[in-house]
Length: 183
Image (cartoon, rainbow, N blue to C red; front, side, top):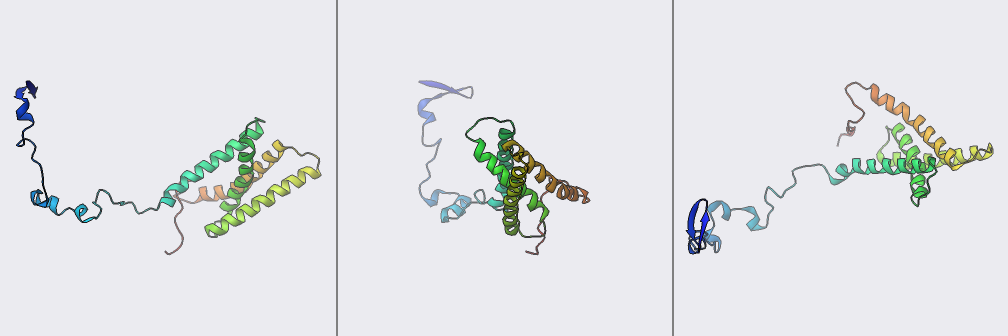
């Protein structure tokens, strides 16, 4: 049986001969560079090591923030459009906490992250209760009106922080914050 290989005719016995593909047996048959490879001693090869020094948390933070904004926006849109969906209630509750918390957190830049989160969530709950009580006292309560009022107040609280950040020279709104600590 003859086959063509690269324009040449070869026999099957020549293609499978032991001279065409030598078999390595043991470390003695390895070339010098292969014998000294770090993987033979259990170490990771340079191709397996992670040279990026950023932590996984720092890489996932923008993704989580984008997902939170998306969920909050969907919750507000479902409520304002009066669309019946099983996701309407949880996404709207997320919007009612996340929107004012993010606005308050951006205004509290001088504090560390944990304090900003705690104060932002506490302020968000206080704002939600204040809006609900005010609307109930004025006899204008509605779910759509409450979501719109919380969204508007959150936007008003967020505006000064965005304007202050935009006024800083040499910085864009999408540029990441640099750590102020000496660590």
